[in-house]
Length: 151
Image (cartoon, rainbow, N blue to C red; front, side):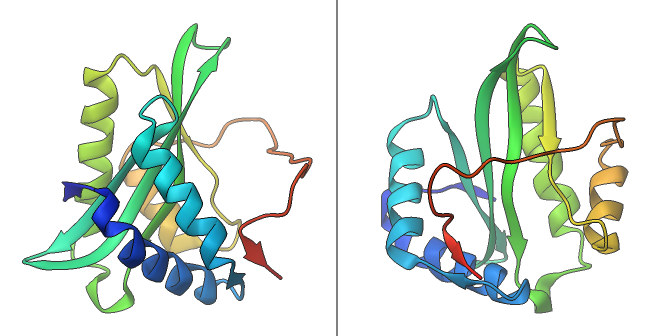
């Protein structure tokens, strides 16, 4: 796994399009490219890594940041996490989460959250194996702009 660079944006958008297509969404590619550019230029918003298998770039993970009152400090959110289908179930997801967790510990980030579909048992298994637990809260959203995906 390596830190993403601006030169990776085109490939990251392609990976994101594959990820969203699996969920039945069409991706607004220009919006996605702009979002990656913003994250890569402003570390205060978050970080992006490219997941590799050998010398192949096969996925990505996006970690965004916020200040949280509950933990009295920085909190992180796994905003996007995707590995191409042929490379799944080989430990890459678990390894990527370990890198992200260690990164967060080194940067005094006090908690990491993730949103995962109720029916996405494979993803839930990966997150639980990494130590993520269910909390007695529900995640709600009020959209104030159009999302990157198109339903």
